[in-house]
Image (cartoon, rainbow, N blue to C red; front, side, top):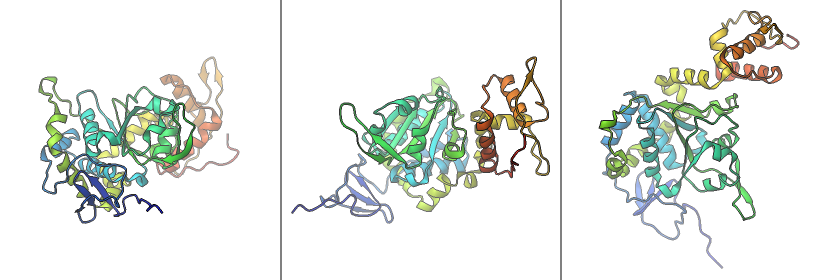
Length: 351
C-alpha cells in the first residue's frame, strides 16, 4: 500500500530552498519527503536579511504616504501567503517611468517567476485556454489593461474564488479549479469595463504612482533590488494576518490617504457616478421622478427635472452611449446604496 502524500503537512509554511518556514514563529524545518509541496520560493531563507533600499523606493513611489506604503506591504504579504480569501486585487496606475513595472517585477521576485503568470486583460477574458495557465500560480500580473472596456467576468471569478475552467489545447477539459494567486494590474489608467456594479468595484484597490523619474536618472532597479528580496520577504512577513486583513480587506477604513483616489477612480470608471457628480445634488428629504427619455428637435425633454432624462442628456453632452432605462435604474440604486452609502429610495410606479 502506498503512503499518501499530504500538501504542506506543517500548517502555515512557506517553502524556501533551505527549508520550510513556519509563518507563525519563523521556525525553519528541513525539507523532508513527508512535507510534500508543489511550489518553492527560489531563495535560501535568512532571518537577518533586510531591504531598506526597497522600502525607501516604495515610500517614494507613493509620495511618502505611510498608510499606502503599509498597504503595499500587506498586499505583498498576501501574495506570499496566498490570502485569496481577502478577495481583492491591486491596481497600480502611473505613467511610464513611474515605477509600476518595477513594482510588478518585485512581486514576481517575491514568489519566483515560475510561480507567476503574466497576461493581458483582453486575453484573460477572451482566451479559451488562458485560465488554465493560472493553475497553481501565486501571482497573476496583468498589463496593457487600459484599452480594454469589455466584460471582466474572469477577473471577478479569480478574485471572488469562483471556479475557473481548466482547458488546454488538444486536451479534454478537466474539472475546474479555484485560483490560488493574487492579482496585480499595472496600467497608465484605471480599467474601464461594462460592469458598473459593486462586484468589481469593491474588489479593486487602486494606488497611483505619481513620482516620475527623470529619464537620465533611471537605473536598473530590478538588478539593484535582487540582493534584497529575502529581506523584502522578511519585511512583509513581519505583519500579522490581522494587520494584512485590515489593510487589504478594509482598505477604506485604514488607508485614509486613498479616499480621494477612490472617489476619483469611481467617477472615472463609472459613467453613472460621473453623471451624479456633475448633475445631481443629494437631498435625503427630496424626491425626483425617474422619468423617461424623449427628445424634441434633438433636445432631451425634462432633462432639468427628471433623473433619467438628465442622465441621457449628460451622456449626449460627453459623448457616451446611455444605458437602457431598465438596466440603468437598478445600477443607480446599487451605486447609491452599496457603493456610496446613500439612502436612495425607489418608489414603484414612479416615472
